[in-house]
Length: 143
Length: 175
Image (cartoon, each protein chain N blue to C red):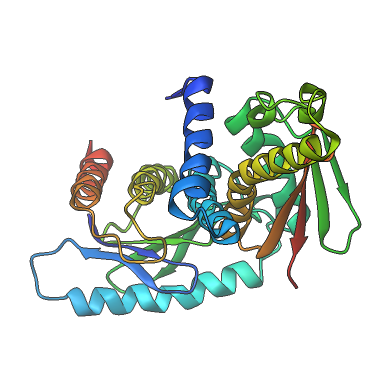
């Protein structure tokens, strides 16, 4: 189950941050998201020797914590997507698929001519779409 | 899903936008009108790159981003690629389009049509025609600048239209 997703702008400014838990742990999840920004910076600036995946948008597993796994994705326009999940055996393909849908939703949201670039995404339809994607991710892995 | 827009509609919108800004909103201040039109282009380019770079790996250097503009971005917008790309390898790129779509409806040499008029008249007419045409180019300049800025390259873009309907865009990357 995905517990938190975030979109972070190129200056590490939060554009969208949403947690999907009933419990009151939003702050903790946001903390996890913030920590992952450093990991992304490190990944991008000191790429490891796995050369073929050098400039891929999907960054893979950023770091595992005791309860969560954090996945990252960095677009060409330096916008970061972060996903926190409680599933301990997530397939890479599923995560990739999730980010692809998430990215498409983001693109549609920022293509709105009334959206001011670099500001938080307030669109309600974007929120609804993200929730749907998040829910389908959970069902996709169990099915 | 591919969505297409009738070319004549785009032509109409671009010309009407330029006419509105130059003739009505900022008739007395052509520079301000140019800046406003450029800003509209900037937003368009900014949002379009977001979409067009969706399924591709990140660019590792400036040249790759410029190549993306020349090939994929231009094909999406104009169904053709940039015809010629020159660079001095110091941050200046010249993108030449031999038949820029938004200028194909612009008359090539206005002074020929006004042969009957006195020399003085045709010169001023030619001048104002050139000025109107250059106004049309602020929008695509803004698009290129918006696209590159969103890819993390801050630059300035100017257009040169000395031999219509070919035109070239000069991109200067700020270091």
